[in-house]
Length: 424
Image (cartoon, rainbow, N blue to C red; front, top):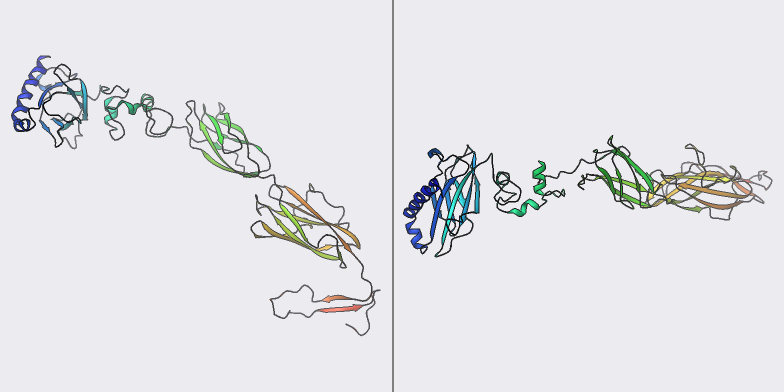
C-alpha cells in the first residue's frame, strides 16, 4: 500500500477506535479497519480524502460519512483482509451545490459478532466514471437514475423496461432513453375506407423510411415495405360481413413497432332482409292503384343508405332485375321508416295496376349497393254489377274516436258505369 493509503489507514483507525470504543465493546470486539484513497487524483495534501464520521446504524450496518465534492462520486469497498478490499459495497454521488451535505456510504450487509471487516472509500471524478458492477453502464449513468437503476446490480442492464425490444445497455450505447418507448412514429393514412363490399382493400399512406407497415385485425396480418420516398401501399384481406378493427403500425429494422393507428372498416357483402307483406301474393283486387308495403332491414350497414324501389309490371314497363340501377329521384322510390332494430318498414302508394295479372317487384339495396329482390303477382279484376265509387273524403286521418274533418261521399252506379237513380 502506498504511503498515502497507509497514513490514512492508521489515522482513521485510531479516530474510529477512540470515537466508538463503547460501541465496539458492546458488539463484542467487532473490528473494522478503514483506509481512504482519492482515485485518479494527484497524491498531494490538498487532495487527501478524509473521513468525517463512522458509525454503526441500528441494524449493525457500517456507515461512513465523507466530505462533499460536487464533481466526484464515491465508492465504498469492503474486504475480509487488508489486501482484498475490492468488493463494491455502496456508491453515492456528491450532493448539489444547493444542499452541500456530507455523503453517507452504507454497507447493506450488517456486521456480525467477532468478525473483522475492512473498508476502503474511493473518490472518482464524474468526468471519468467507472463501471462498478461490470454491466456496461457507467456508475454516474446509474447513480443519476437511482430510482430506476442500481449501480451494484448488473442484471438491470439486460432488462427492457420500456418494452421497445431494446435492452437498457443497448439504449445506453445508442444514446436513447431506456425508460421511454423508442418505437418509430405511427404511419399516416391517406386512404380511410369506412365500408366496402370488397374482401381485399389497399391502404395507402406515409411512414418513416426504413420501416415496414404491419396491419393487424383483418382476416390475416398484412405487411409491406415503406418506399424510399416514405410512401406505402399494403393490401389487406378483410374478414367478411363484419367490422374489421385494424391497427396499422410501422416496424423498424429491430422489430420495434410504433403505436398502432386504429382503423375500422366494415366489410359488407350481405344483402338487406326484405319482405313484401301487402298485398300478399295472388291477391285479387278491384282497384286501379294500391299501396305496396313490407319490412326491410340490414344487420351490418343498418339504415344508413338503405333504399327500396317498388315496380309494377306491365303498367310501369318490364320488371327490373336485382342489378338494375335506379336514379336518385326515381318515381319508384318507396318511403323507408327505420323502425326499431333491424325491422324497418317501407311503403309506396298509388302503385298502378292493370286488369289482369300484375307482377310487383320490390328491390332493396344497402349503403354499399348489395341488392335483394322480392316479387308477388296481384290480379286485378273488373267489378261486375252495381258498385259504390268513392267520390270524396277518402284517405283522411285523425285520432281514434275523433270525427274526421270531411264526410265520406260515395256514388252508386250500375255495372256499365251509369249512376243509380235516386241513390247517392
